[in-house]
Amino acid sequence: MTETRLEPGTAAPDFTLQDQDGAPVSLADFRGGKVVLYFYPAAMTPGCTTQACDFRDSISSLAGAGYTVLGVSRDEPSKLAEFRERDGLTFALLSDPDAQVHRAYGTWGEKMNYGKVVEGVIRSTFVLDEQGTVTKALYNVKATGHVARLRKELGVD
Image 1 (cartoon, rainbow, N blue to C red):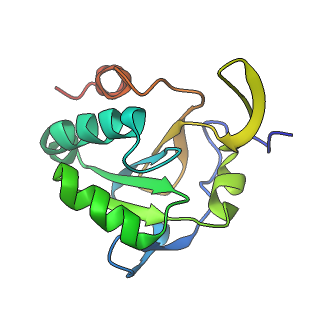
Image 2: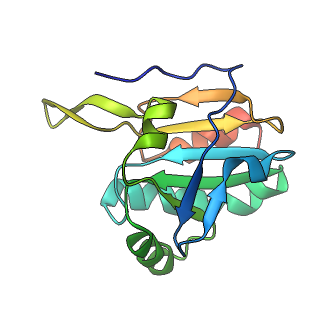
């Protein structure tokens, strides 16, 4: 069963999670700035690496437009640190091992995987405004090409 999905105009659920270094990161800390919050299945898998590297390669233009990028997965901080180091990622990766934040955002539930229905992470991206309101809620995104499409939608060169 898929959790309730967020819609544009709703308040983004607040959370505090550990980052790749084990430090607490709270969504509330980013109020006053725009946030791209993306949920991905697993660090260091091919699709998730492609997506993370696309965000890495777009970080200067996103930051220039006032966006902070945060990635969320169920991986432990030590694996996130290895992922960040291995691929030169320059944004925070957050650990949600019990999927509580995934559930709050509707990114945990049934999905198709190789023709079978399984329960897991639904690759999704949220754009939040300066007040922490969802302006875009994109569910079931593809790893490849997603960041380029997102930049186009946001008008970020």
